[in-house]
Length: 369
View 1 (cartoon, rainbow, N blue to C red):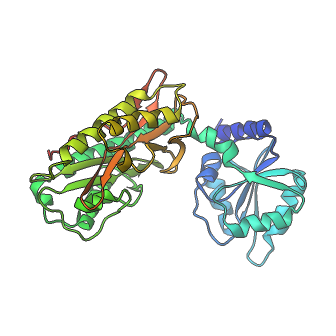
View 2 (cartoon, rainbow, N blue to C red):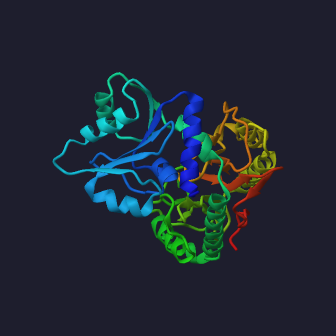
View 3 (cartoon, helix red, strand yellow):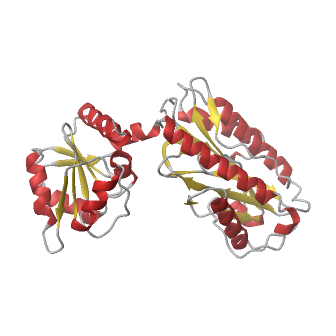
């Protein structure tokens, strides 16, 4: 059976478990996950109805019919033409699956325009979010997904080493110029496209966790936070290192970097099946607190990674989810000294039968190579 078809059948099993009658998907990573069809949201109504049993049905504009037939395992594709009312076709599917008074789970990212139309077409139905059934499935990656994530990690590792080897050549470059250099090298190393907006945070900009990159020039002794990755076969790399390309860093920097590196290692060592996501966050946080920087660690320890760069499981205080083999997430503690510098070290890990496998292995020291 096609891998996407297997995912759809698991989705239907989950629908039965939670007492829902159907999932209604919209152009998103959820839609791709179960159907194999990938598209960005648009102004036209495009839905995939996944009933609790039986085969799913696409309701799509005419222009997508042939494309979906080529790309998806789903064979029931019903099209509407510009000028038609797509909700008439939706009504036919709803009646066929007897959903008028049912409980439907809509795609979490569905635009309000389309959720409102669904509610208008099904005034007696109740609605929830499809993450209730798909998030537990998507959190545990199959071997093909893990292999794509491994390759994405290798691309990030290769580029990280190359960028660090710039050494003194990076001095005088702007953050934007270095980000462009990183993205060019990601492509050259086999990445399909950047997984997110590359972060190059130099000096005081490194104290802003999601700074991005700007026109500040990198100077001697500047700590520089480098956070980047590329998609490979639909799955992203995501790695962070904090380096000094040349010169002497601020006096406190080495101690902060040591605290973050030890915290990151503690987080990795805490991972194994059965422990909670919260306990991994606690492991990193305790190390940083022991160095006196607890108040400067201002975000969670990590996030799941898959078709979306940020997805479950979230490695954060209060999350009592027990980790299971096949889950993939980041471990990325950081310390941020406002107006001076920041330090973050990040690797992706996959939970194994007795611990975890790191998907990144470039040097974690701060000295240039």
